[in-house]
Length: 347
View (cartoon, rainbow, N blue to C red):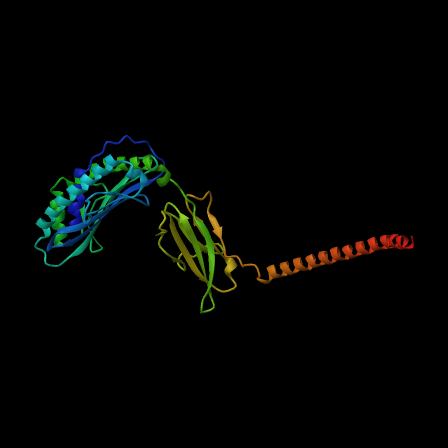
């Protein structure tokens, strides 16, 4: 609910004047706002993190002394005019937001809490808006949001949420948000995609492999890894023969690797000795075709030893042959020089 105040102010303050080139593919621009609110402390803290697809591009933290938007990628850092524009917007939101927070919730007695807001726009390959959205959660639970057509509001069935919904319905906030999502949000997204195309429009294929882990029960866990891929969207699953194992598969959420790429794994527990019946399937836009992987039995450790032994035997044979040839040559040379020595002694 607190984030409603902060979020709804944003489109009223944001402006842009960008000449933008078109970009291919589907993309999103998203703002994650987190508010730490305490009724006894007027200077509530809020942070905003902005993403294009899966890349953080700017952030703002009201607790920072600079009170400035911080660039997270080079192409934003190289646009000081746009950074200044975003900083001014953030400062105005902070000031007005704190005033409104105190008016609405200053008498609350239920202590501090966290409110989160997700807002943004998605575009398709035709560079047109696919959808815009604004969702607000209070203590991790849905609270209020814009409808899909961006014309009205939906709130949970509590007295406080319904009061705020009625206030919003009586205001121009929905109209302002719709104007922002259909206009400036799309323009900014296209601007970022153009300026940062090498970073934002790349497709790094996953490096994939299967690992083998025996269990205490005598079974085997096969884990299929996908590493170092971008963007984050990926399809990872297991098959037994030709049957998908979605119900019997452990799948972790896609996780950042810390270097701008992502990682993910999916695991199945299989009977020992039947590993050859299981295949991992990986689909990602960076791959020309899906990967199909299975666990391969490693080479026997005796195999390289046998190879080394055979090589040593062969080397030994060659050395013995060379030594024998050397001895024979010496004997042959001696049989020719002995008479000459005898002749010299006679003379």
